[in-house]
Every structure is written in C-alpha cells, then in structure tokens.
Image 1 (cartoon, rainbow, N blue to C red):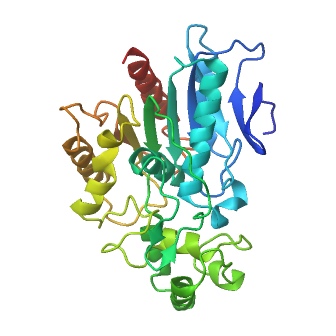
Image 2: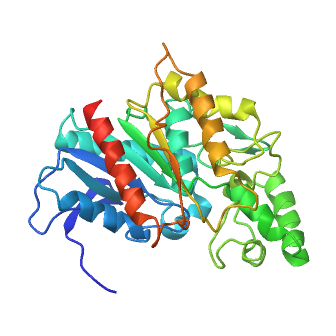
Length: 339
C-alpha cells in the first residue's frame, strides 16, 4: 500500500543521503540508529525499518531516530561497489550526524543481510583502511580512494548475517548451466582488472539479479572462490570458516576500539537465504567466543542478552518476527543509552 513517511532528508556528503524518520511534527531526537540495507536495498525496501521507526517516534520519551542510509552501493550499485567503500561512507554519515546533533550523540549502526558485512567490516578493518589492499589475485576495487579515519560508534547490530558465498554455491547445485557460468566467471575474475564488468549473460545465470552490472572485484569478494582457506573480504559469515578467520574479524573488534558498547546479532529462523543444515545458534556462539576472546582488559564486546535466532522470521522479517525484532532492538538501544 502506498503511503507517505514524514521525515527529514539529510545530504551527509554530496550525492549521498539518509532519510530520518520523524513524527508528523518533528521533535529532533538526540541519538541515532543508522540502518544499512543489503544487496539491492534502498529507502523503505526492508519492511521492519518502518515498524521500528514508528515504535520509536510514537514514544515522546524516546531519544532515538532511525536513519535509512543510502550508499553508493544501494539499489543496483552493489555490483560495482565494495564493503571498503561502504564503511568509508558510513563513517562520513556518522561524522555528519554528530556534527548535526552534538558530540555527545550516541550512534548505533544496524546492518541487514550484506549490510551486516558492512557493520563487521566497519568494526574490524584497519582504521583508516590501507590505501592499497589485495584480495587474492585481485587488488581492491577502490585502491585509489583516500580513506579517512572512521569515527567510533556506540553500538552495532547485525540482522540476517548470511553468507553470500554459501547461498551462491547452494544455488548452483544440480544446475549445470549455472555451474558452467560460475566457473567462467571465476576464471575471468581471477585475472581481470577488478573494475572490469563481467558479462551480464553469465552473472544473471548464477543467481545475481539479471541486468545488474557486476565487476570482477565485487564478484570475487562475494563468491570468494578460494574460501575457506583464503576468504575474500565479503566472506565473513560462512559456516565453514576456521577459527583463524573469526579471530581476524570478530576477534579484533575490541582491539580496533571502534565499538563503545557491544555487538548484537539477530538471525531469522526461517531465512530463505540460509543453507540446509545451518546451525544458527552454534554460529552465534562461535562469534561470541571469538569476539570476547579478543576482549581488551576483560571488557566483553558481545551482546549475549540480545543476540538471538528469531523464530519464524524470514530474511527481511516482512511479517512473522517483527514484534520480537523491534523489542530486541529497543532493548539494545536502552542498554547502549545506559552504558
């Protein structure tokens, strides 16, 4: 159903915007929850964001606003983007909001699906990112960027943190045409300049949205053909990743010093992008152990109280599970505010 959504449109850097959900008569809130969508997402594409925003704006005592952040990789831009560029832009949005609301503003970043990769990468990658990084045989797509130092955030949430690689490989099973196309794409991406656009007739066959441009660098990062031995940047949540990989991602969150409170993760119990046999509870426990093993001075960085598998919820929680998701996020924001 078509409807209007009161709010304020912020241009946090030239050409990039964030929509802040407000009540019909806006009352600026002190703190900010920045929502970051997954592949193909943009404004209002994830159903529960509106529900969450309404829950916050309906309370006169609430101090939080929801910002639906657009990145260069939003909508159809994901195929020529990277999580390096994503976290650079997220950092710019955080800086903008604190300059707008004040240095004491609390900011939480919340990622959905591949947006969860952005959240973990924001917290675990070197700060600032090195000007030139390597990704197997492929250098970074964004190696020419002058990376900025990312500002710390007060909290972080990952929702539907699924593995793109495992989902892709599962889609290929029993499909000879798709498997052949995948093999061709891997061979191309292995030797191509990362900015080279791959053939649409091949990327559309292996499960990517038909007609969406995908370059060699992003394909390699999402498909991560050398995993689990040599995971590419986007391969953060696969179930077959070893403890070493978890130690260099979840395990360095505390050391980077970019997370004030704790990291919360919410799986969807009926996630259609999950591979058969995925033990979500076991994954949460592995991530908790890796995160807290890297604790500095014994400070816990995993939010065990809020992290959970939401029963019956689909990938984007379009119906069942929205109430529990909102309750858990509101509870988490309360803990961040009291921290």
